[in-house]
Image 1 (cartoon, helix red, strand yellow):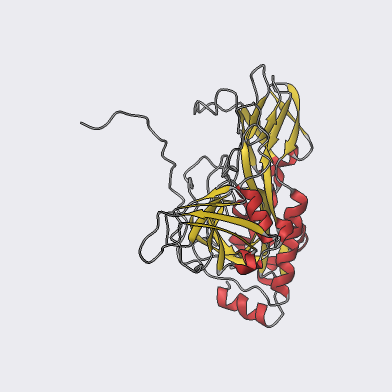
Image 2 (spheres, one colour):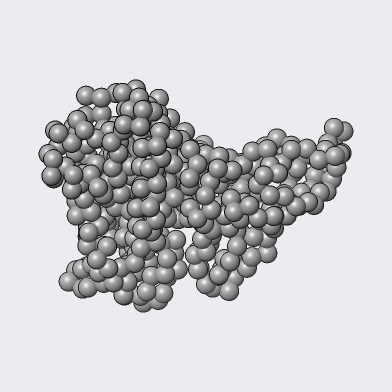
Length: 396
């Protein structure tokens, strides 16, 4: 048995043994779980892909004279101003002003909140336009200026839902093309799309949330971040395999970190034809090997992880519980799956190559003593279920 303090002492001394979630599989096969658990201190996990429920809080400081922003736009993308005078929240899926959206279907969605976040992290100069009704202490009613991320007092990424534990494989059973957040789906099951790093993905390596919880330190696009809550729609009480791996979406993480310390290559605006805009984000999470049981969890393989195949033409939009079947990530990554006797080509919205790169970068930071682990202050719930929105009349 090890403790977080034991492992952090080894990290600070430059003696920590760190492996990625890919590397640990073969190492345990060679050494055995008992010996490997005694030797290995940390296993790094990672994912990179679109994470729509993301955004950031920006503080601009006060102009002269001062303004209480009641409406504001950054690069013509609306930001939320229902905070203090010069604090705003920018959501990754917010569209640019006058974007035609799906008026001329399918819309292109060339620029939105995710692209603003990408440009901010890249250090580009952006335009702020703000309006106000004016008050005695905040008399300015209109402001237009240009800024970079270094001009801001704070630029804090605050993401309510990242790092889905598992997710659907999307197909289209209709006779027309569908444009979804899972990408383009051709009619009559001509293709399928998924979005997960599989065996590298953080919560699949800690399926019962034994080490990843509120307060866990994470590598958020190159910055030191942390889990600040269970993610929205976190639903740990779901069907699982004999190894406790979820057979559906299950857990999520709410993450935060300093955007000024992020690396541009891991923060990318995403345009999804016919759907909208999003943010491609890279996340790495270290798993401390406190005991042999935790180590064995990190040896999960793509072939052990099952994902549900769901029709996005009818079942998904109508919240049907029907599942067409299950497939594993080893098969998904082969580029072709079988659905009811038919071979279907598969594409991925997430980048396994980037996830592998992130896991290696995090492992190197830990080996150099630059990234310490943080013990969770609160476990994520394993028994929670997601409530639906019920459309109903007012209560009498």
